[in-house]
Length: 155
Image 1 (cartoon, helix red, strand yellow):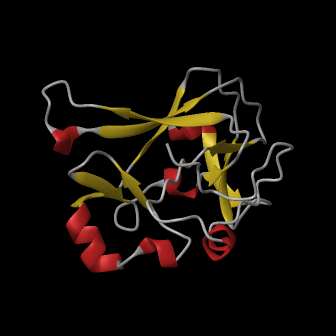
Image 2 (image 1 turned 135 degrees about the vertical axis):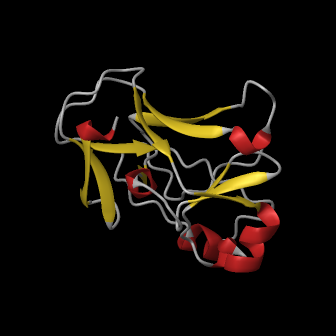
């Protein structure tokens, strides 16, 4: 899967992932990999990520998350965009085992070589979205419809 993508510097933020070959809409681009941890383990290791504005943690389900700080692959470098060309989706275990759930990044549309791959991080916090938090989680995607923050409206 990853022979069609490459990590390099991004205009959005730090590192990014770019297509080096055409990718068609609906194609699986890459699986988000890392160490499987419980939410409690991640909290004990990293504390409250609300205060950092940066994380390689991807929530799988109510029990587990993927920690791409450990054994993570290039998928951890995909940046957020308010107008993404990819989406992350959860593949639940066919046997109902939450330890075997996976996250796959899929192209929303055709992507040409040289384009940066992005998805909407969908970050939802249970605390009020204060100006300080919005600044901490600032979006730099540059899209016409950029909301200015990675924080998503509460449901």
